[in-house]
Structure formats: structure tokens, C-alpha cells
Length: 299
Image (cartoon, rainbow, N blue to C red; front, side, top):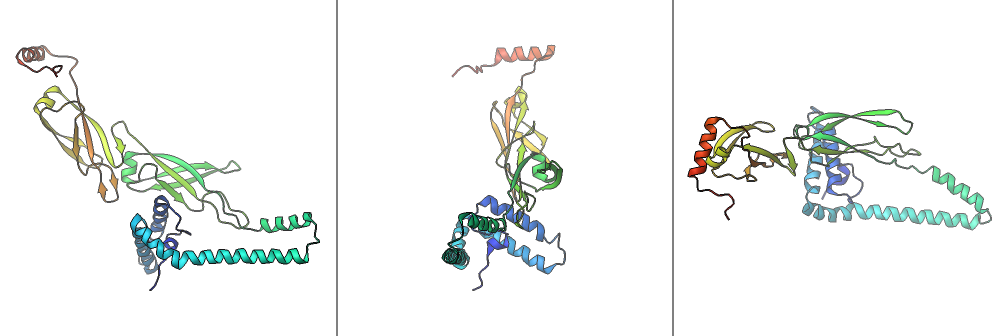
């Protein structure tokens, strides 16, 4: 049996990662080896297949738990054995020095340990920041620029590709763009939190879109049908008879997106009463007042 290290395929060193970290690693790897970027490159094509297979297994909690048992057997225990071995070697080396160089002063020993410590590679810290995107930007995807200042005060500008259907507070990882490492250690990463802001028209709730729809009293009472402009196409809306303010008209598959899935478009009805009436309209309302038995205050 050939065991595939899915974590290594996604550039992850351990299985102690959450779904968000797995998603970020998948996006970065998929973007690097995507067939559209590496045309006629068979090696990249195979790597892209492996990456997709890894994400399919690790993105589902049930299959991840099952896979982790195999990973711990084939990979995890070897890593632990290596760490224990390295710890034992360090302990034996320390005992050797204590045996033959015990006469060294504490100051000299501190100096030696300090020099060894300086030579140890240290990974740079991650940098976290946030940028705003509109609902339309998140739905269709968009490239944005972000500027950050280095420690010395100089500005660095990054072009960030916001992928289609990104979720609110989802992070984009730019590998190696964080703080520099020390003693040859790797640079940290830049983590960009995407904050999707509600527009004046739409409010985002998960992958559902919520908006208000204004109705005249006669439209609400008699029912009507009309077309509104959705995120990506016109949407036909049917208002049933007797609609009240606060009622919700739900239209499936016209909301925000999550991969191939679409959320709902939820229209909240609000009945608008005219503030100015013509003479003819006043007569009609007075006539309706006389003949109607409807009393909204009657329980």
C-alpha cells in the first residue's frame, strides 16, 4: 500500500490544523499548480490532482479523522521518534561536556550556549491585517492592492486576488510575506482577513442575501408581479395577495455563492403609503374607508 501524505501535499507540516488553515493551504497550492496556469505541464497536472484529492479528504471532518489515524501511524510516530532521538542526542552531548569541561565557569558556558542559540534558525512572525470587500466583489472576485509599512517605515504594496465566493472573515495567506526569519529561518506569512461589508441594498447572512422590497397598499392587497435586478441577473418576483409589512418572499438559488452552491434571496416586504394624494385618489380612499370592513386594530 502506498501512503499519501495529504498534509505535505498542501504544504502543511502537521495534522494539528483546523479547516480554515486547510482551506488557505489548498487555495495557495491549487493556484500554483492549476492547469490554466501550467498548460501542458504534466507534472503540475498530477500535483493539482493530488492537491484536489487531499482537500477532498481533509475538508470533511469524518474523512479527516479516519485519515489522521493512518497519518499518525505512517508519519506522526516517525516525527515523534525523530524528536525523541534528537532530544536524547542533545542530552548525551550535554552530559559529555559536563563530564570533561565541568571546570569551565558559568559565564563561559552561558557564552557557548548563547552562540549556539544564535545559530538556530528562527521562523519569522506572521503578519495579520484586514481589507474590506463589497458583496459584489466577493461574489464575482476582484483584485485589490494593500500597502503595509515595514519596520523601517518603507511601504510594501501587495496585489491580493479575492477569489469568487469568499466568505466573510475568511483569510487569504501570502506565504513568505510576513516578518523575515532569523539565522536563515523562513519568513512568516501575511494573513489577510476579508471583511465583506453590507451594501445599502443587500445584507449578507451566511450565503443568503437579504433586501427590502417596497410595496404600495394595493400591490400588497391584490398581489403583483415584477422584475428586480439581482447580483448577476434579473429576478422575477411574485407578491401574493394579502402580503403584510415584514413578510418574507424567499427565492432559492439567487443569493450569495459557496462554491457551486447558491444561497437564497430573501425579500422583506415593506408597505409604503403615499404621502400626497390627488383629488381622485382621495375620493377613492374615502370610498374605500366607507365600504371596507377591515379594521387593523381589531384582534
